[in-house]
Length: 117
Length: 156
Image (cartoon, rainbow over the protein chains, first blue to last red):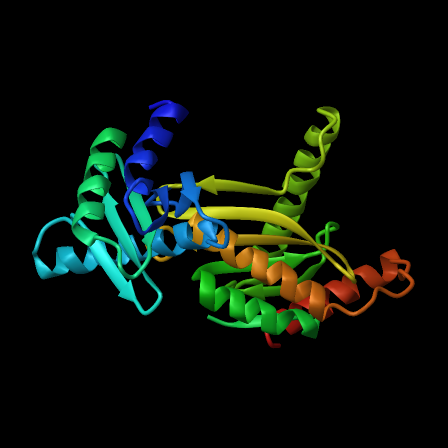
């Protein structure tokens, strides 16, 4: 996929009201592949920690026998982290405000994950 | 796994880095290959080999960058099947340090190592004493100093 295609996939997510930034992260490496983030969000740190968390959650899901991770949503006092893994080993990550429409954001994250492949 | 340091000011930042990044092996050394601290190595021979190879790689890549008229590479990474290797230099008041980090891909990632390496670099810079007048290394002292360093690094 071209750089323009990656940016297009992120556009789907950042258009949702309340989303402060979106990133494509290599799940295995925890490295940013592409991002569109508002100022003040530490993209490399979010990518590294989300990648690590994805690996551990994946193992927990596998141990629990509930299949592959499709979507995770971490709600915090000041916002939320929403993640959808794509088939190619890329994580589509959104950093959002507390009042974001999670359902809509999830839908766009899944569309972005499909676009990334 | 033990963490030991010849230069005491490197110990705390190194211990924190190992804990945060989930590194399996770490070696901090001068660009000449003199070991300052290590984590996870159990044999002196491994430390000596890793230090020699790590600093040789840094010297080679610095020369490649020079030939390309580029500033030296910030870091070098290699990903194997089960382990990753991260090699990078960092400046301190005590002179440049080369860090060699080996991590399990199951337990850590390049992103985590890079993230906490930035913190390690900042902490080492802050903890490092100002460099004094460089001591001339005499061949006669070299082996004694090497033995002393290895004894410290392996708690003998």
